[in-house]
Length: 425
Ligand SMILES: *Cc1c(COP(=O)(O)O)cnc(C)c1O
Image (tube, rainbow, N blue to C red; front, top):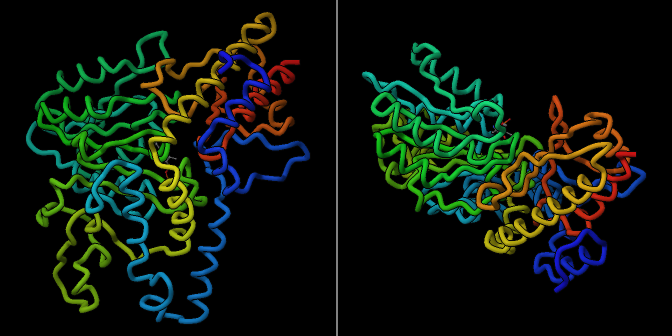
């Protein structure tokens, strides 16, 4: 094997040896541009699996053919449609099937879980989160705190130190210790959406539990990207969306995890709906909510089947590829992209330099690299877009790119470097 270098030959050799290389053919690559698209925004909206339209079509057919009877007839009856997703989703997040359910959207699920698991009482009233969390999470946390009539001092943020971009894990852990018996909930994004920093969820969970707090994670940028072991890590709850690395349609269904230890706690307060009610007696329409065991007990509404059909198409691919192989490719692919960017940066120092703020250590990142652009900023990003690169711009000067292991190739990463260099002008 040739040592790593920024050449087409090296990229092609890596692709030839990639056990997941054929998965790319299961996706639609956008065609809106006159140039070939180099798609690097699987962290924002994953590409469409080709099978999605077949699976959605099957449900449209069922609807046309059976009408309401589609709940019980057809290939995948809607009454239990979500159950087709559970085992696949559990595999992706390292959970037991009873701990996982797929439904609703991410922010909805975060609220439903926090209603049950953020239970401030006595002096234990605080939530710890990361500074600059994704805006929806910030609003969700703020409104949960206000919902309990508490002041915003109860939201404690851990920020990067002065002059640094990343949050030091030791600062999270020491803040947890410091808050001690005032800490009700730790609620952090497993992978930070802006920097791509991956936190050690097992350590954070243990630290939170050691002071008697509940620990939950937003896995929007982690599910389908990071090798997760939520059950073994002892995480209390988590939620993630299906449309980023999981490629399951814009606004598509989201997943929830509730640890087995909370599976049979009907006394937990929750905002209930009929789909979380005992399956056997659901259609008796009797008063008195009796939650299903496990994560399914947090479902409100009957399954949004069309979105779930798209999700199923993608989850099958993840299952076939396996998170172990996906993780191995992710590290190689992201490492190569990092090498290419640093090489371009090094050779063009006078005009423009790129500082990757995502951790260098592969145990602290997934597939995303966040590049701080010193020099041409937005103009450079716009040129890249003209060249057919689909990436993501964040003010004031960060380009986020994510090579998705299921469909991006080493050659994509090589061409990104070429187009980056060309765009510097
Ligand atoms: C993408 C993302 C969201 C989006 O929430 P929706 O409810 O799906 O619109 C929320 N939080 C984080 C951390 C995200 O990355």
